[in-house]
Length: 286
Ligand SMILES: [Zn+2]
Image (cartoon, rainbow, N blue to C red; front, side, top):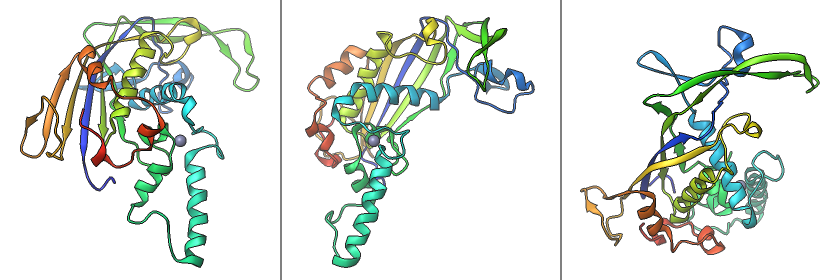
């Protein structure tokens, strides 16, 4: 399924910090070993350090929100050894191998391994991937544009061994506020319901149900999504859809604004019929 590119979508948006944001630097190579726990994640632009939200943490937040939104539809537990799609699929593949040895047949005809694994995965793994399935979505690291403020606050130190607060021990942690982060999500070989899922996650972020980084119980990490635009390409030029321009190798459409994009997504439902689809040729163009 991944040997061929059917479509691509790039969703660009700004994330405005509605409250202070603390994104832990996961780096171990910082000069001060005591600073590891409470320094903001930093990337480098023209050699200068810039606070950033790593693509991997954006993906983690979007994934866990998708799990909440689709929990009625049989979502696996990616962190669990036995309740995850990857464990179940590997198990099924081993059993199938055994059967093939004795019966010399399989039930999936011409489907590739990727297609079979996609078909067997839960809706969340179908988009975000698993140990046995390639992800269809990638998140860039998000850097702030324009002015922003940084600050330091004191928090109570927690003893790593006992989990109790070390009596009176305080440490400073760095946060960023009044910032606008430029974000970019890329989808490849996507189904329409997967695009709709991203926009449902945007609503959860705006409503404050989904937060980013640490100290959310103290009100940190609330965000607002702004300035959304989406560019969609189909490499199958036979797709009949409105508003696309012909670019020789593909047809392309750019849609600006959340209202206009929501209009395109409104007939899409999150149901078994949508999740079951695994042949992109049968998915309508956006
Ligand atoms: Zn899964």
